[in-house]
Length: 461
Image (cartoon, rainbow, N blue to C red; front, top):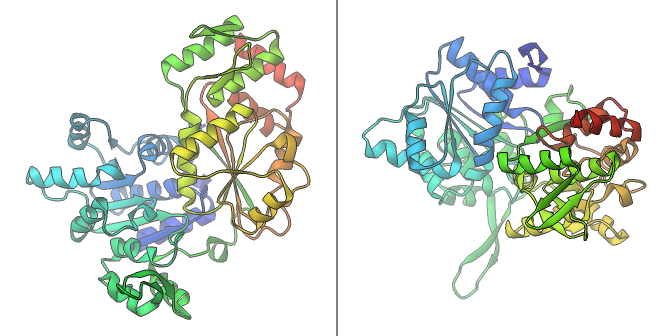
């Protein structure tokens, strides 16, 4: 179903107008509030209504650049005609995408330096008069190559805005680099040293070498810093300025299996039995088949000996991206199968992200005290009775389940009295699988065993 511009929320229209009226801007909004469509709408207006912009560059994390921006563009009637070229892949593919005739060019942040160097090597002036930095917090390190490349191009950029959920997740020092990319040092100073001197004092120092380990904000520094950047920011707290925000938002994120992975899924669905590397997976009836297909949508499945057979990592990749996009805000992950839990822990460990189960009263206390950045919860064992609203406001459903009661009870762990933030619930959905049936059944509030069987039968037909 295509969405129309009239479907934008009031707060989204507010943000579009803000960006259009501010050549330098920061949209500091929580996850799931539609920063992408806000930006696409503003780009459309600036390029085809006011003709203030001629060529736009979007810088984003790899998956977001590859999937989210093109998909979001095509969802809306007023943006689907924007010609978009995604600059990813091999060097040859990136050059081809860069040379394509398009309105908006999307590049992953790792290739910003390559883009700058390629243009310079071929003696091509910086061609983008508008730049959108998706996840501005990834430019907080002013010593990184991507930062230096974009800062070098900054004088040639007419309009720029950054998108982020939390600009200072690791402290107020992070803000200098992010703001300097946007305003070229006008508000917080051109140099990090002057910024530190103005708003911080040394917190820890080696008495022999004089090396400072960390800096502590001076009294009133936070308020002073926010006041200085207030004119280019939508808000530091969206709820304070946008009273029409809903108390709970649900956002769906679609992932897609490769043709080879989808072939395995379709074979089990059709034949009720599947052999993978000598391991047999079978389904005796529709209910069992439903479970097997849900497992495969998640990325793994048990064989006849209850051993885990890996299928894909699509949901794990999306989960990692969503945690990164949370930028230091605590995240609660709901899983269904034990192999989901094991794979989540293993995968995130490789990304140097520590995960902790919420099982004991001590775990719950630590979560509510903000001591657990990423936590795991099983709806089957912890969906009722836990008060988790003080520890965070972001819930990610890695595994979808048919039980409407468990779903509502788990959502209510965060979305309950005492919650001070807008709760964002993320569903990770594998395209063209039973995940979509589960989601529809939950939306229709008809997640019964009968509906489960009907959905599987419909898939079989």
